[in-house]
Image (cartoon, rainbow, N blue to C red):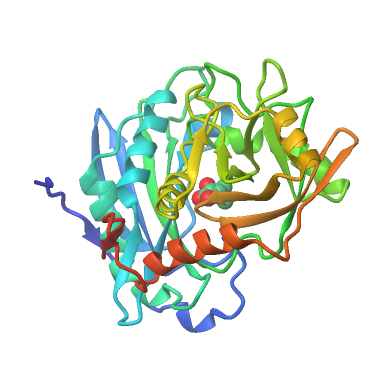
Length: 354
Ligand code: COI
């Protein structure tokens, strides 16, 4: 049974909802009326509060700003045709958040704050959940070190916050991908499996270089041999080769254990595919492309959902994929969306009622 916790609630005097153009919702630009905030002080969580969305007051000596003890999650809420609101697989993100917390020497956030606080916050801002295909309410829980000290050590105090953002598609168009062979995202023993803020900061220079050359995202490879693919931008990656689906396995601890990744694997199995979760080398992908057996490539992520990849460049070898016939990508996305928008039975218990 869920322990209860007092959540103080202060409502916004005026809603910003009417100012939002729900036909134009770029990812992560608009925020709802309320946010949840909690403090970790003296070994316990306190001051749990839902209040109007507002700036934070941060000291220049804030430890997270200097040493990067900061983690986050990405989750989505949807509405069905009867106006019921649901959060998609929040317990999976809750578990992963606390795995990230442990790796970054941060405290665990309890279920009654992470899950129940999120549910309550969304209940208050439920009118902000867009009710149309490819749209949703993006939920961003995050935690950062809040000690005001620049000595290098794990902070004693932390802030946990949840903000909400109504959003449309993240990648609207099929993507061109640069396969990176010099820079790396994560090495074995590092923090690649954690949703640590610095993993994203560290990718920005390389992504900017790829963008200068006309690509949308970077496909990372392993740190040791620069040979095995890891993940792609903010997504896990899938290759349909012949009648099999290949996706990098999680055992090296260098790849984020995507909740959408797991969802798509489950649905692909239901569609009758054999999934091979194992090291996938770029040489194998190139060989499949040359042999004409590499049929579809796509990425998965909470923000990205299921995103089509139309081209990959590795050194001077260019791979173009036929995006006029994306039978599997389209079908898997449809099946997942049908569950999310309440058009198909939720047989796996993925939808958490708000
Ligand atoms: C998500 O898909 O939720 C992510 O974390 C990607 C994000 C950095 C936009």
